Image 1 (cartoon, rainbow, N blue to C red):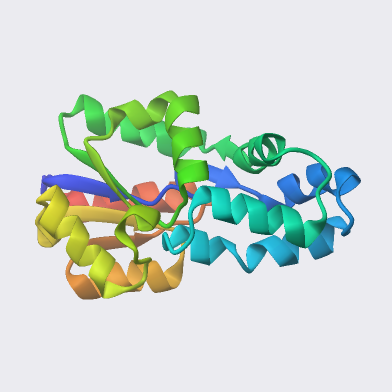
Image 2: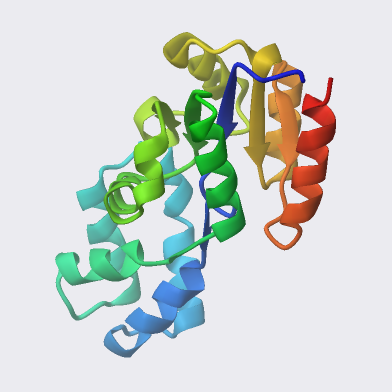
Length: 202
């Protein structure tokens, strides 16, 4: 058995499914824009926030202004936070790896709004030994720099680290950096398990 030294997981659509449209629909009755137009207006700001180029407060203020939201920043944030659904098969996989004593890490393009929410809401995040979040690093996947941050800050060996991501460009960038990369589909977890078994078979 070729046991990995560590695992590196994306969050969105790997550990937790997410749907920004869910938030747009909830907010729409209190906004001047429709759900579709509001979603588009806020979506333009999301990568800016996830790169840490604006603060949470700046993001909320600008988003509220763009969509004409009539509530408070706190209520707007609460709706934006709650967009996740746990991926039970992957959570079971993570718990098994933890039971085996393998170090677990996170690598996610995310914001303070979402990272603080999912860390306090879902117990599975207590199992992890460290993380690299884009908004804290000022760079995002698939930028090579963020994979270097994983190595420098988490101390992992890419060749001995299995990395799971749902986006082709991110999985490819991880593989180019030397990680054992998996392109994950939440609708076909069984295929991931088969690939993992093949990769770790002696």
